[in-house]
Image (cartoon, rainbow, N blue to C red; front, side):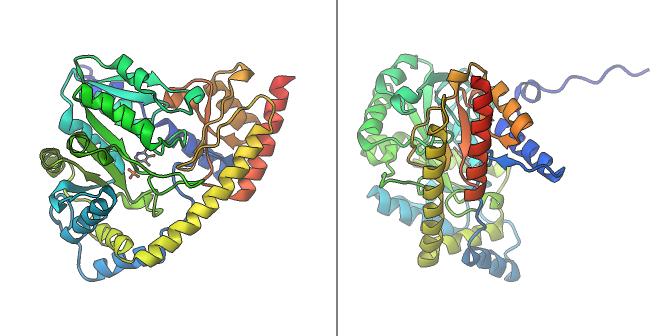
Length: 397
Ligand SMILES: *Cc1c(COP(=O)(O)O)cnc(C)c1O
C-alpha cells in the first residue's frame, strides 16, 4: 500500500498564474469555437516582426549559429545595446553591464533575485504589471503595494512612496510607460521619486520595456538619467518584445551597475544559460539596420496612436465610463466603478454576454478598472466599443 505523495512546494502552491494570459487564452478558445470575439486582452503588438530582423536570424541559422554562446549574450549585441544606452544616458555604459536574457520577464526576475533576500520588502506601485508581485514572492521577499489611482494619472507621488518605506525596504519597481495604465512619468515627477529612493538607500528596478511606444510628444525618462548616484542604484530592464514586435523571440535586456550585472549573469548561468543564439542575431539586425527598424517602429506607433484616440473617444462616450488618455504603451485603463460590479464580474459578464474580452483591474491591484489593449484592429475597436456600450447601457437600466 502506498502513502499519498508529498505535497507540491510552497512556491508551486502559492504562485498565481498570469491572469492576462488566462483571459487571452479564453478569448482565443471562444474564437476557435466559432464565436465572434472582440478581444482587448492582448499583451503584445498585433504586427509581425519586421523582415530585416527575421533575415538576421535566418542568416545566423544558416551560418551555424546554433550553439551555446556566452551567458550574458553575444558580444556585438551587448556592444550595440551599450552604445545605445551610452548615447541616451549621456554616460559610458560598458558591454559588461549589459545582460541579454530569455525575455524581459526573466530579466525582471533576475534583477529581483540579484538584490532581494528573504524578508526584504519591495515597493510595487499599483496598478502593477501582474508578474512583479509573484516574482518578488518567489525570491522570498515581500511585496508592499501602494495605489496610484486615476486621480494622479496613475502616477505615484513622492509622499505615497515615502509612506510605504520601512527599514526592510530594499527595492522599488517603476514602470514607465506603464502596463496596465499607459501612464508616463515626467522628468520632474520621476526625479522626485528617485530622490526618495536615494534618501532611503533603495535600489530601483526600472522596467522600460515600452520606452519607444509614446504619443502626444511624450518623452521617455528613466531614473538613471539623474546623475551618478541614481545610476549606481538603478537596474534598467527593457527588451525587444514590444518595440520590435518580437514577443515570441524571448529576448530581454538589462543594463545594471557592474556588481549587479555580474550577479545577474551568474544567476542566469545556472537558471537558463544564454538567450537563444540565433534570436540574438535577429536582435542585432534590429539595432544595426537602423533605417528599416525606425520605419517599422514609426508605422506601428502611428497605428497605435490612431487606435488609442479612437478607443479613448469611444470609451468616454459611454455613460458611466471615465478614461484618461494615456501617453504610452498600448493600453487604456478606464474607470468602471460607477457600475457597482467588481472588475472580475464586469469582465466575466462582458465576455459572456457580448463576447468582449478585457482584463479586470483587480488583476493589476486596482479594483474598479479594466485594462483594454488597443494592439488590435480599428474594426475590432469600433465593434468592441459598440458592444461595451450596449452592455453598460443594460447595467445602467
Ligand atoms: C511585456 C512586458 C515585459 C517583458 O516581456 P517579455 O516578452 O518577457 O520580453 C516586461 N514588463 C512589462 C511591464 C511588460 O508588459
